[in-house]
Amino acid sequence: MTDPRRTIPHFLKKFLATLGFSGYTPIAPGTAGSAVTAIIYFFFCSSLEIVTWLAVLAITFVVAVYTAQAMEGEWGKDPGAVVVDEGVGFLVTVAFLPHGLWTAVIGFFIFRALDIIKPQPARRLEDLPGGWGIVMDDVIAGLYGNVLIRIGMFVFPSLLI
Picture 1 (tube, rainbow, N blue to C red):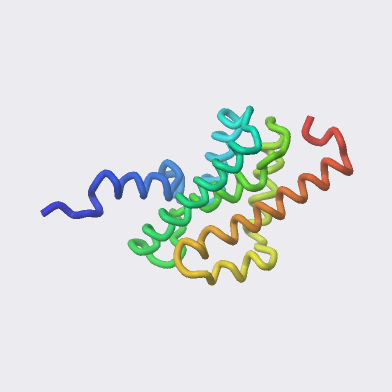
Picture 2 (cartoon, rainbow, N blue to C red):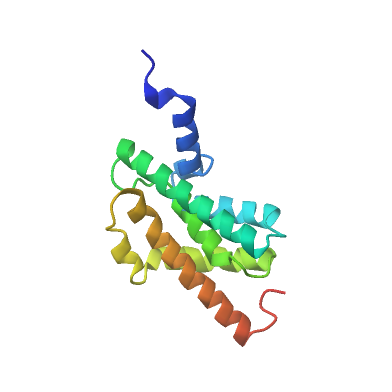
């Protein structure tokens, strides 16, 4: 009998949860996952309209919660190789902002700092069960990052030009 963990759907869950296996990076897998997402954002999200952004955020959120939960069941509580949550958090950080290299770079560094610091209520949300706890703290970090970039754009109007 075939081991269900060896099936293509399982392979796909693992591929998505680790953002193309970037989560297997031995040092700073969350940073690697965020970098992969920043590159994808830069090259493929240049002309997203509001409705498309909403769809991207909703779909990536659902996929992240589902795959994070599936891998947590196999690898244990909040496994380091699962970095799809960092991908969603980065996308929330740069959502609805002017697209460009500086948005990607600034968004990357601000998101990584906030993901590491985990300002409240992000830290508390890690206690949610399963994939919810893995993903929600990054979504909150992304929201904070988005607001900080917007404040920076207000104070320094040419920030992302």
